[in-house]
Length: 124
Image 1: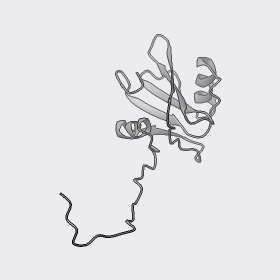
Image 2: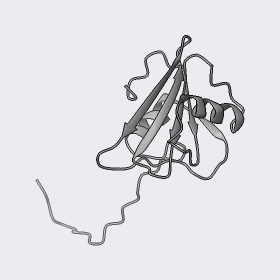
Image 3: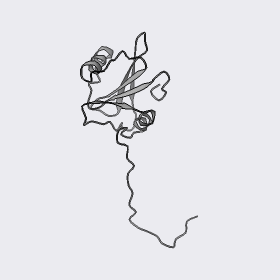
Image 4: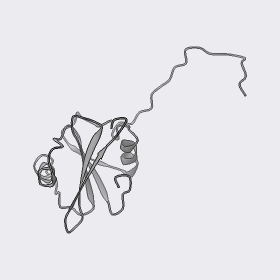
């Protein structure tokens, strides 16, 4: 469900740490008080991560009620941005980065420096 974005027009990531013991009301309050955003904005998906980076929660107002989603990875971790105290709006591409394990705000590919160069060797 989190990988599919049907009916979602905006994705907002709550950077930093969020207490994932919070339910719908608590997370909606975090959106309103900490980030000064409207949790009742239809089609806006709010994403939260706690101190354990192998799980995230998502909150979505569907117009007639909230949808609360929870995802826990069996192997691996989300690379969650922690330093800014602001909420950040994600593009669909950045959202995809998050789900594959990259930091959506600063995705970087590790630079590789070969230790040994084989000149004249042909591999087929």
